[in-house]
Image 1: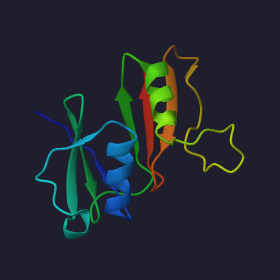
Image 2: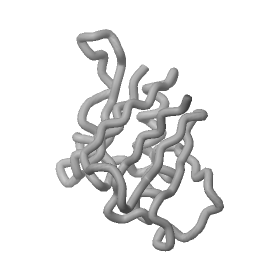
Image 3: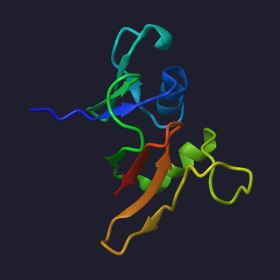
Image 4: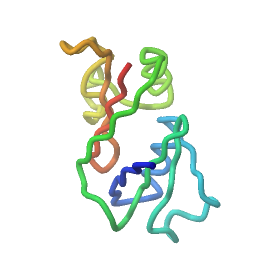
Length: 121
């Protein structure tokens, strides 16, 4: 059984660019223009998420597990992910990577629609 989260988006084109251009997700459909779609499936490390113009709710949280948390955060920053050290930056990386009190090392990313992705190791 697969469980596939739906992330609601106000602008599918911007969201697809963010998820694929910065966060290492891949489109798994035929690549139609996002303005002609209502749902776009993405995959990362074998797991799938749907970006939707119609379904889901804004400000959803999605946990993404990884074995390379520090490298991943560094790579995302190189691709343009803004971090708290920049006073002009939007609040995209909430924390991290830091070791949480519950033992995982994490950083949080906010997508263009206010959904949070918690990258955890």
